[in-house]
Length: 163
Image (cartoon, rainbow, N blue to C red):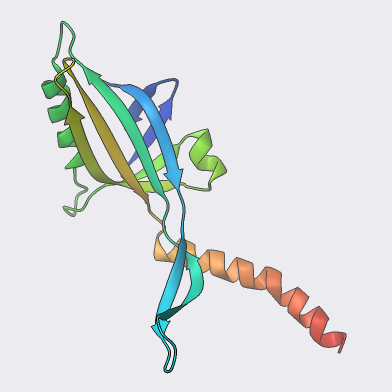
């Protein structure tokens, strides 16, 4: 169950009902294969066996500028408060994602996992990088494995019958 939602489109990012005071500069999604590494006797190095997929990482980069209302540091403080937001159990919030890029990558829920910020001496702005990690509850992962095995089972049965 999600504790809120994350949306980002048209240069605007919202966490729940809060629209973030920054301009979306960039978004990236990274997926990776999970490997099991084991040492084998008589072989140098480790043997890598693919074991599935890691949770995806979603990264958003926001430009926090200073204008008449707030300065970039106030906006960063607001972001930091959202980053440290908690559910009723004191845990980081799980957010449902509403974005076509993430939907294309089958990412439905994320956790706000990191906040980095940087500034330069050229302007009065901060570049904030928001990192989200895909959240896949154990029940969803189990259901996906069952569905995948049911799809593979008819193919296995057919190959056994042809023998």
